[in-house]
Amino acid sequence: MANKEIAKIFRDMAELLNIRGDSAFHINAYIKAAAYLEALQTDVSELYGNPPSPKASEGQKNKWKVFLVPKIIGDKNAKKIEEYIKHGKIKEFEELEEETAIRQVITHFFMSKGLSLQELKENAKKRKIIYSRFTKPAKQLLELAGSIEKAKSAIDTVAQWASTRKLDYAIETVFKKWLELDRLKPKEIVKKPFYKGDPMIWSESKKKWFVISKYGEWLEFADKQSTIEWRTIE
Image (cartoon, rainbow, N blue to C red; front, side):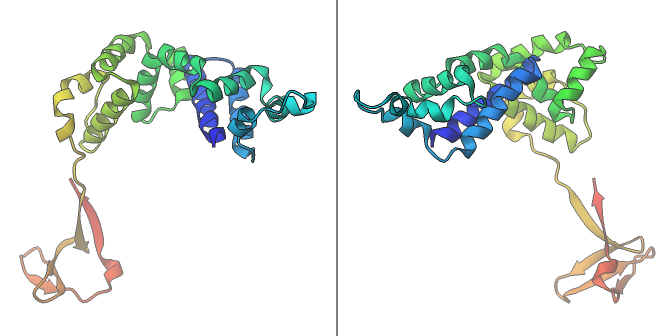
């Protein structure tokens, strides 16, 4: 159904407006319109694609608008819905994506570090984060990647690789690792068994667990499985 496709665009527009710093009223208008479309049982493209005959009543002629112009949707968003049904896209959404491209990359970078959009805004307002410092490298990464999604994906790859090694990373790190992205993998997390502080080992031939004492002796494990402690080895 076109409803879900248009609803997704409206939700994406709300997110981009939030990144841009628009008013809550403007942002919520898209969120409400998206929710309305998602709950609508009738496919809006069918309503629009099957106009009534010229002899039909005004009510029939405007049948699709009955669904789309309640206070929840509004005239402006109804026109966007009509635009999508006619052309398969919404120009304002495409313009908004282009306008906020650099901000999207910067926002995604900080989110990869565990910072929410709201926290990023608050830190920028308090000058704890100098937003302009990240504009140039974000633009360079965007140009290098060729698209917002590829830039975000590259950030995610570097973030996963760095976090499993407890390394800090910047947007510039993505440039330095660009030719290695396919080879960057998160560090494998290895867990090994211990019993009361002593390491354990599984004997495949005897199908038994053994505890290695501090003297190097292999002592047959005779306790409950629940007493085995699994420790992460870095």
